[in-house]
Amino acid sequence: MICNNIGINEKGHITFAGQDVCDLAQKYGTPLYLMDEDKIRENCRTYKAAMDACFASALPVYASKAACFKRMYEIIAEEGFGIDVVSVGEIYTAMKAGMSLENAYFHSNNKTDFDIEFAIENGVGYFVVDNEEELYAIERINDGNAQKQKVLLRLTPGIDTHTYEAVNTGKVDSKFGSAIETGQAEEITRLALGMQNIALAGFHCHIGSQVFDSDTFLRGSEIMLSFAAQMKQKYGYEMQELSLGGGYGVRYTEADPEIDIAANIRQVSECVKADCAKLGLQEPKLIMEPGRSIVADAGMTLYSVGTIKQIPGYKNYVSIDGGMTDNPRYALYGSEYTLFVANKAKEAADFTADVVGRCCESDDIIQPEVRLPKPVRGDIIAVCTTGAYNYSMASNYNRVARPPVVMLCGGKSYQAVKRESLDDLIANDL
Ligand SMILES: *Cc1c(COP(=O)(O)O)cnc(C)c1O
Image (cartoon, rainbow, N blue to C red; front, side, top):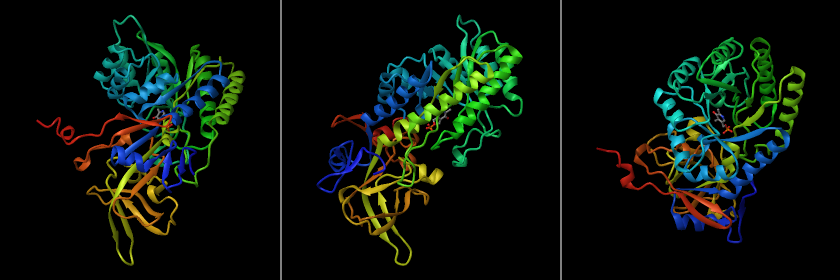
């Protein structure tokens, strides 16, 4: 199995977090997002323990965009994480979950004046400043406040990862951040240091996503530290915090490698320490911002099979009661997934079909050419590793209601997000 929280029981049913998913589909209906709370906590603890052991000062920060709802923030706070947020919506959700915003890092390449006012008023600890215009806006909006606003500057170290172009953000021509290579990173640093209402806490970079080794982190930290050393030399500025972003990968299929997060963090810490010593820098507080690797393998989506269409000489389609509205990732990036017919997990996978959604859109595909036992109407399809970027990317296209999120914890289940009703769909229609 691609993850140790997936199994098959004596009835030949798929289990998730030790629970029969056919029973869960029966109890809560489909489509249904399941989240294994114990796995989320285990993933958090792996990061927390490794970072605490490796660095004198460190903070893991959860990238909210992977999966954002109140219960998620409660768990994250209990595990001692900070949060990365990119909108007032995420900030508001965290506030309503009772989370302190002291360790909140506010990202986004385009923060409006309203966003900046809202974040400052509500005590967001840090802004991760993308560009000069934003810096001027914070300086202006924070004028008259007793506290300087702490910021990190988002820089692009100019690294091209070998992942998908669409999730590749560390290159010079990225829409995010200020490039070191073009001199814009130095310019924004100089500007920040001269501002009255801003306290420059350090630098940030986020290079890629779904990466399986630490090469990009090692290259990234090397470039960032050498930049920090230049800033120390030129402006006498000593960086307090360095954020290396998120990006460690997860297994969507058997072909994806397993990754030892703790070993990778150790490798990064050795590199950071050696570079700091070499460059005469104080060791900064080290921040990492995992999203996917906290929640992806804690998620599974269940669907009921509807129409099965066989087009002789061409292909077969298995239609499910969800689709790109609850999981747009194949349509967006061609993402791979592992699927099962959950009530036929021990039967031979001798049928090939595209598993497709119910939307009026040809690209509404969950996964093409899946090998599975031939399903019939009413069977349950389980799609694995859907904890990240599924619920958070869900839409109401075709006025399809979003599924609930059911948490699995210690053999029990409870709802964290309820199913949208038909009335929810028209709630804002005047
Ligand atoms: C998306 C993102 C992350 C999280 O990336 P994962 O690949 O989900 O770990 C972290 N930091 C920033 C700035 C991001 O944009």
